Length: 240
Ligand code: ADP
Ligand code: MG
Image (cartoon, rainbow, N blue to C red):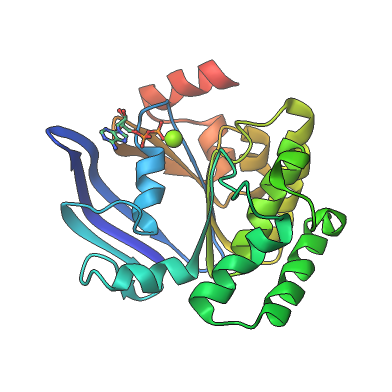
């Protein structure tokens, strides 16, 4: 579903990604962790074309992002993204947040877009909030809207960038539960998170990044019980 080969990326003279090789199979759930500044956000932003790379190839669901500029639009249509800061449109209602992109970019009718939006808002268990504005919702509810909004585009892959980091502790679980539900339905997911409980119960593979490189990757049991690399041990020592 995702194949990155020999990816190198620089911001000016600073190399932010080095020798990234990564293959993700359909339905696979990957957790990405690592210290702040290690390149996790940059990595997943490359997968939906929010960032370009200087070397290497990135192929998403058979579409080569690095071959043609116009492929970026095709890939974005397949990849849903959820950010730390929700990124909802504050001046639109919850329902409008969910229907805007499908109507604009897919040419779907308002009625159909609204029906789809209500289906996903029901799935994230907040159909009753549809006519409110984002500021009227709790952080956990807003993040669940952001997930529903991404699902309204019927993505084949979902990317999450620290989706619970901005939430009050009591709201983390409701968002993680929503993500676990998605995982159980077979969605291909790449999740940047330090929620190691989530990683243990959901991930097929945990990837550890440091200094722009994938330093280590392993199934969760092995990753947590027998980390190989010194940097991984150090990191786990800090967060566990
Ligand atoms: P992480 O998500 O693991 O914290 P990021 O991918 O956000 O790491 O950032 C990796 C490194 O790249 C950091 O050192 C950060 O300061 C730098 N960086 C991120 N975005 C930019 C940018 N737009 N311009 C220059 N440097 C950046
Ligand atoms: Mg980040």
